[in-house]
Image (cartoon, rainbow, N blue to C red; front, side, top):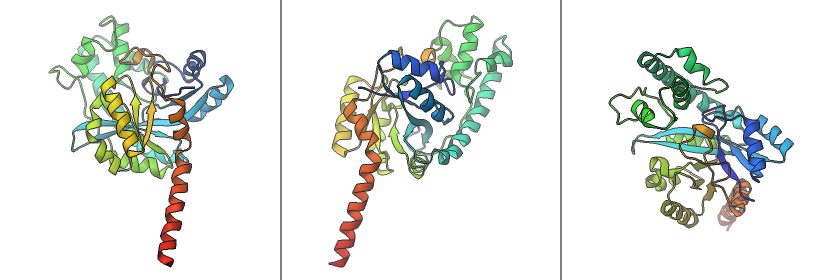
Length: 294
């Protein structure tokens, strides 16, 4: 069976709750998903408990935000199967505080431009661990200023190229810091949707930093890029994953759970990845010891 390894819930910038997401997966015939909320681990345990109730395996994950200063690009990296997820709380909290500060500034700018109260906007983020752009847009939809989340108004307010944007700077950790934090927590670091921020151009650099895999199958990756990424991963013997980046009505693409997924063969490799790495490390240690004794 295929697995959707990139799904968001109301805990970050998704529009559906954990149980609703799992029910959608079950009814769609998807028996494995990963909840990968932005810089938020809150849904991991609850997701696994609810998943068992519906016969859906929920792989623990979190999508961590980073910034590549040299390339000048945002980078998202998913941590899967961390042995000690609590070790990721520090970096999650650090980013959450920065995002909250930026969200409040953007909210106040929007409230000053449109006749909507700050509380009205905040209410649309109920249940989330933070205030995201989608929450602000949903409030403006309900106030009658637009009929969609990602339309002309969104780009007027939140595109860096718009002279009327309300953006506030947000400080994100470096790619190296994120990958190191994931590995220190015993997790697997996978680059999310390279096509979204054109991160495929920096794959060699990220591989040197210890990247374990790439999200090959994604609504942000063109068919040509998907093939290029698959070839790259196979050449460098790193993991291939896939996911819909499901956000419900808060998504940039019209996708359902499982519309982009990880084939069973690649899911098996992800699930056995850490055990295989440990075996390889032990083998290398024995070989080194034997060489010293010779």
